Picture (cartoon, rainbow, N blue to C red):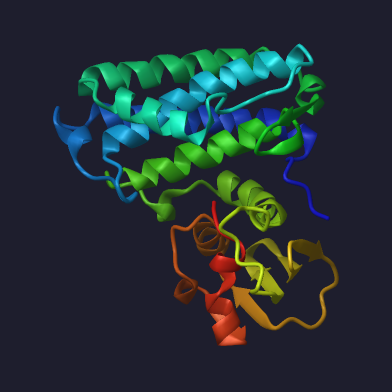
Amino acid sequence: MPSEDPERATVPELLVVLDRATAALVRALEDLEANALIHASLLAGWTRGHVVAHLANVADALVRMTADARAGAPMSMYPGGRAQRDRDIADAARAPASVLRDRFVHSSAQLSAAWHAVTETQWATTATEAELGSMELGRLVALRLTEVEVHHADLAVGFGPQDWSRDLLSSCLPLRVAALARARHRADAHHAIDGTWMLVCDELESQWRVTARGDVVEFSGTDRADVVLSGSARDLVAFLLGRANVEMLAVRGDVRRAAMFKRAFPGP
């Protein structure tokens, strides 16, 4: 079974990449016109302000979660649940653009400071989060890097999937494949859709065979699959994160089952 946790030795490197990605997003926000955040993002129902508010709120949550994990306490990204998360985003998004940008900058700086104080050994600290389950603390860095670069593209400000960093793609893709087991347990997963899918990324010289039967997911073998989905690391990441359709990939085998993949494994 592949792991959603990055290799421990790579976490400090991912943190450096995250700092660069955050700085790029800050520069993009500074270049926007005063009223730009009230306009629609690429996410249905969210303005750009909602995206920035979400990123700021999550940064605050990650600071708290890091402290909890280092203290041996359970972590929670959204202590008030998803409904409270949505209310907090909506409330924060109403702030003037300058206030919202400043809050994102401050929250991101606080998170960076907290994470640069964590030693390489401490990144292996095991903690439990309500939705993510048992995990090493270092997973949070990989998740945040994914979130910053992907939501930067969601803002529709001239930065797109073609600009995602090589570090994001090489680290994110195997972790997103591993997350398919958790996606299968979502309430909106269609357990009647089963089969075996092979995800192939020649660019990274990697492939993953994913089998779903009911709510059980297995990663094993490299032989027969009902359908093979091939693409670049960028296209596969975009597909797994719901930013691209299966038509972006090369499909071989059961085309109908290929089209059902995101119903079988919803998310991100």
